Length: 65
Image (cartoon, rainbow, N blue to C red; front, side, top):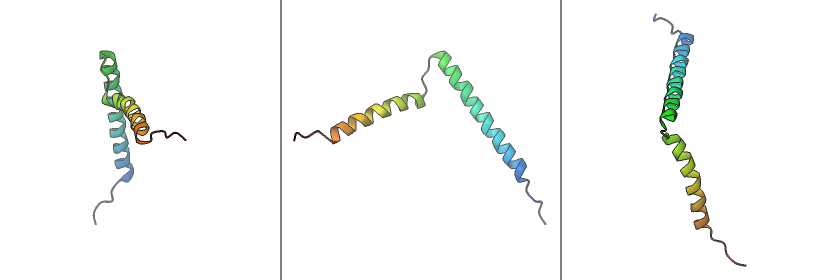
């Protein structure tokens, strides 16, 4: 009979890996901000909103009544 897997241990390991990755990302963003580098996530959010509003205005022109 094979050994029963310890799901609590596996879950804890996964949570620790996730927290470590999140902390590394946070530190990287702080370092980038200190160096004056804008991340792709920040740039995409600003550009995406303006592009969508322009596209919507062109697709539905106002018609006089």
